[in-house]
Amino acid sequence: MRLEWSGLRRPAVPAEVAEAIDPAGGEKLLAWAHDVGTGETVVAGRHRLYAVAPDPEGARVTLSRPWHLVDAGSWGGEDGILKITWVDGQRPTRFQLTELGMFPETLRERVQASVVLAETLDLGGRRTAKVVVRKDLATGALLSQAVLGPGVRSADPGVAEQVSDGLRRVREQVPPRERLGPGDG
Image (cartoon, rainbow, N blue to C red; front, side):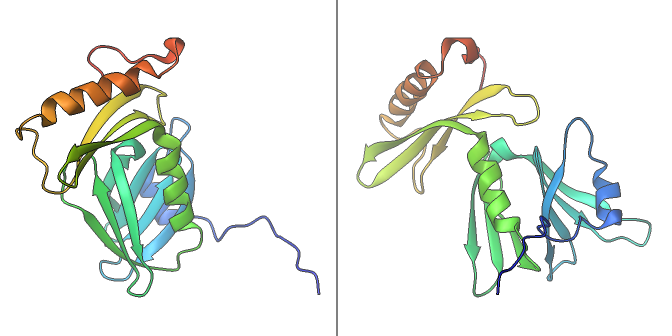
């Protein structure tokens, strides 16, 4: 028996959720999942990650963050917990998801799409940091980021210098027509 692909990933984002997000400026809602713990709908857009909570007066957006601020997402398949860590050090966000559809794959693809260049720095003593050039998927602007590994502090001896050198290296690898400005981040 041969199966035909319908071209549909899953049903469209629920209307009340899409209305709360009110996508504009080229934003397209790509995938969604339901959080059984909070009742929120988690949505992967082309430019941003959203969470929308049900509300008697109409659904409301509780999270709206661009993909270049997502450091990583880790999926605990058995318990259904998606943990998202942020490059700006904000507390990780957790969702207990059901009805996944293409949401995990879309999350991964969107985060990857924002990464232009990345380098892991060995800081010695099993300590690491990441230096990354990322793209704001809404504007195309490039920015650089440094993400310190567990237990690493910028005030630790030599860390600031190694991170600064790493950021310089990844910035230099960006093609000249796409170079970052001096105050890029």
